[in-house]
Length: 602
Picture 1: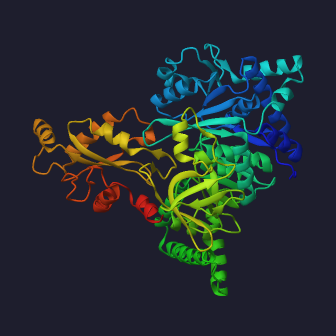
Picture 2 (picture 1 turned 90 degrees about the vertical axis):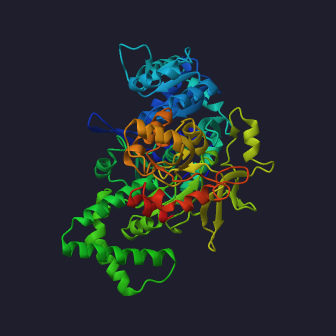
């Protein structure tokens, strides 16, 4: 690796191209076949996209929105935007329309790049509020008026012939403290906030995270997480810098097949994928013959015992070591083969990794390195390593990252990874970054005796699903209370796969509905038909939400929240922790058993 670190993302790419000179820089599957892109070819295509965007009037400091599914073309467009000195404003391809509209209105992009015309039609109502916005699509459609990416590249190549020094001139004008991206995240109010990240933020975090995870130019990575999220996008920059061959999965659904085809050595994911893999393995084990199931159970027992001793830094006796090697050969080798047979390490972020899954995968020779961070911190501030891994923690802080705990246990961080601020929201920026540059994460944590960071709670009510998405419960609860059937509502979602709702009904109105439908009136709170009616009411009230925010199941409570019962504060605010504890069994009944074990393993 070169001694001198790049100062901009375009310089990072150029340095990687010159250093690694890879013929297999990136790979992607299209029309059933894998296509390979060399380092030189990718940089040349970035130049063409950048100059093509320049020919459309994109200049340094302009904002360009990118709404697309993760793919090779997402990274190509991302780098094309950045190489003009413009600012990428990514939008999730599944983002709710009202949020798409908000982001477009506030960020006022020069143009919007969309993956395909299906997405263009989906966001049509949002686009009506920005009628002058230029559209670029990955997909070429002769019957449509939007410019496609191939045409952009062609225009860029022509401009390069006319002005061969233009690209280098544009690149030389980009500075390390220039913004590279504005990424919108939803706060507790439900109004998205644009996190401003500079070139320096992203380069620092990519390189420092890489120094911990230690990828090499011999590594092959499969990427499938949303590139609209800062985690996987930063990981792409990390891979580029360290010369890792990047292979883009066709889709999340195709990951299993792509693992077998690519046989990667490194992969990033969210804990939910590992939970699903574990659940699939357990289901297969249930179908084994008696003798094979006995062997499987023995291997799991030996493997987890071995992994726990490794985790606790305790010596492993010779007989257990031999048993683990045998278990690895007879049982765990099949786990490794399922992920391609060459996987050396997997990095998880976005939510807590259940400890029992961490032990099981470590036992199988598939260590999962749990990390931690936020969009506002570019994002990683701590991560476990192959040499220093501790299950149940998020690792140690990255080199150059400062961490401290406030008096109430809130995790605060300072360093080059901390965002520039929230776009157009100076007051909100001052709330989270103090005068000394310390960013308040909103998470409560503690350090163990070895310096590993443990996340213990959320300071505020903002809830994080096990898939890594955030949910602000109060706006959703306010939506539900609009119904004349609902008196009070409480959302449960933190570290769960999906949100559910505890409903305190307006019994009088609910009884009237039940009577009109000829339903039994003796036990309204447990009657399946009544519950289904209220569930439909909830679905109708929340149809504007993103998919991951929508209520999947409900429970109707037999009595209201009161100050006397302890569920409400004197100012009539719900004490979430008290309610969740009081109705723990009822809440658990709304989730499958696998979800409960995951939550219990935090």
